[in-house]
Image (cartoon, rainbow over all chains, first blue to last red; front, side, top):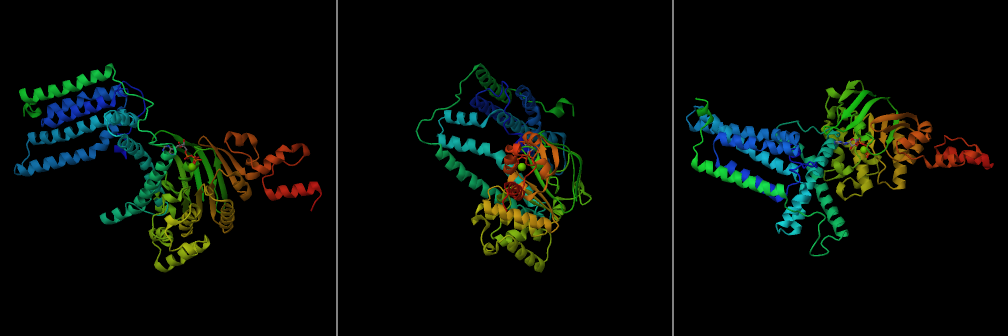
Length: 262
Length: 272
Ligand SMILES: Nc1ncnc2c1ncn2[C@@H]1O[C@H](COP(=O)(O)OP(=O)(O)OP(=O)(O)O)[C@@H](O)[C@H]1O
Ligand SMILES: [Mg+2]
């Protein structure tokens, strides 16, 4: 659940929250590109640190840390498998550069999680839908997407209630071997799925009752307009990409173990 | 039976839902918990079977601290019926649904069958035993949920808003049923917004507001205290309202029961 919490929109107002979601997405993409082209620890570390001012500006530090904590499990798996394969590949020895490589791969993942978490923490589902609509995606899809995003926390809460109800009937989720444990989740999944289906049918009826799809061209309560900060972020994102590619091509990046004189 | 000492509870998101609750519910008591939306009623009763653990203070069930045992262990003693039956039904037949908890508690085959039959009869569900719970009406699903808990014969029965969505005759049946459970020696705790339901059952009434207990006493005292009820957003029982409306005629003001009201009026009007 903590992973979702780290991605759930926080409705506070900050310069980052006010940005156009399309631009923010462009920014995420630029981080993505740079994270993908580097295999060295140093630039990935820079990329990681580079984003922290955004987190502080958006005042979502607490949630951001939670999202990182949620990602820690996957990150440790990435680190572990990298170390393991390097270890086997190099004939059962491990050098500092192997550890550094594994750390770099892990940090790449963390930097990506970081940028996604900034995006989702500061972008309301409504604005996201609006941005999709502005990108000429059919309204039906935009609506389905935003509804899905919005219902994730609702579903999570429902799952908790169902779990409580079954525990109150003596269900012990942690009991038994691996297979048994999976089977323990059946009494939770079935009510959850049924209620999700029932909810979606009800939602469809309620929407039709309120004239959903009555006219081709809908109007919107909010509109998106590019402002000064948006242009600024576009520039920042482009700069990130250019600098990234430049460094990749023309600069030979030292490894940290070299810098430290190993 | 249930002993609560200086209980405070804060949800992970920082909502302080219970503030300094101390309470004792004795064996065989019948308690109704009332109060406005968000008063903390559901949060409180979730402490009775360990679904929630105190942030501060302690909850003892039959002398055992809920902190030290699993929900499943406590559930054997404290049966908990949730507001929405759809949160727990998942089996193919009503019969399986009722057997689910019994299997969890490790009942052997013969007593298990006996208890399922007993519970089906108790709630008039015999004709539906092979039906799918999802095909039943809302009221019937609620009864299945009730049967699935009563089947293991817990000493304490806790119900969250049992009267919601029930028609009048079902509500009346439920009332009789709850009273019957109570006279058989079960401890019964009911959370409800239904003043009429409470005034007709005449249990001990606990009134909550803003995470605190603001009143605790017999229905006659609590349900006729206008100031208290306003504070907790609960309305007067209709009978009480009538008697307060005609207080110039010098009727007692603490009448909550229909039968008592009728007697009083008949006596005054000289009828029989
Ligand atoms: N899972 C939760 N996480 C965070 N806060 C919660 C949670 N459940 C309830 N609350 C909050 O705790 C407070 C008490 O809620 P509770 O559900 O106990 O009220 P209630 O008296 O049962 O109300 P109702 O009559 O509406 O059922 C409310 O302010 C509610 O918003
Ligand atoms: Mg409640």
